[in-house]
Image 1 (cartoon, rainbow, N blue to C red):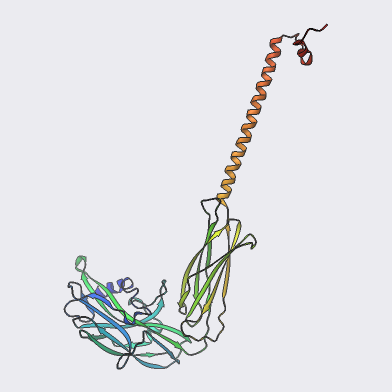
Image 2 (image 1 turned 90 degrees about the vertical axis):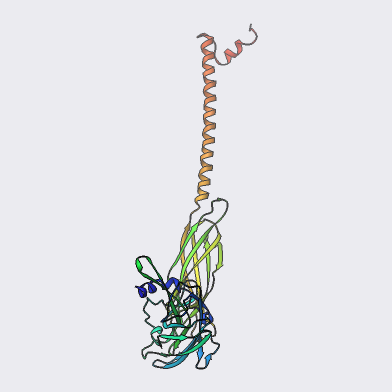
Length: 374
């Protein structure tokens, strides 16, 4: 039960434990007076902290992570140093796993409950290491590249971990694994093929509640590394409306590193877009080398466009209200005019009836009201 629950809880417990800067990171865990087999109960106030760093056979060598370039079939021996900053001895479990980039752009290694299929399986290291209080132990490990390994970058991580336990309901044991480690990236020699893709782009227009103000276009897109080496990327989003007469451009946060087979999502909001019908949104992603990488192959930008409709609902509603008011006022005036004409006609009819049947009409009737004629 302990092993199963520890594996299940690992992703949340160690989500950021292995990062590009984690070589000297310290992890804290409540421990007893002694630690055995990497399993720790959580019923004491004493604490154990530790770090894991790349090392030579003589001790830590100042590297923050390990980068290797090897031929298929090659084997190399490296070292790691585990330092126990606590006041009690501790036994740490050692393991390696495939590496990946998280959604926040940080490097991590697969949790214990996920099986590695790439460079994590190339590393062999002893299962555990016992480190005394305030002591450092250097441990060798070997990395063997398979004969059939594909050219390009193969990321992995190596870590030292401990598991804390506590009693759960029904007498079960709950375990949470905490780990600290560093990355090990192996570039297998061969043809370098950098390739960036933008497989999914979507754009949605949101109108402003103010009919006299423009709206915005929210753009979401994925940046994928379809090549065999790590890449960074810069991206830009532009919108075009009214046959290209109105354009807007916005930049997106850069992608610092994208591993082969990995992808990251970017979302950009382009404001001041007037609702004038179809809006063309264009995403341009330009790949670049990471760090000191030298890439001789051309790094071509990728451009993808989508069209969305910016319908001026607020403006149409305003026009509808104005039209209703105009028609209402016009009809009201017509009704008033008609009522007045009806009243005048009725008055004339009543005047004729009161004058009798022999009363003159028209001009003759008007003359009868003046001076007598001779």
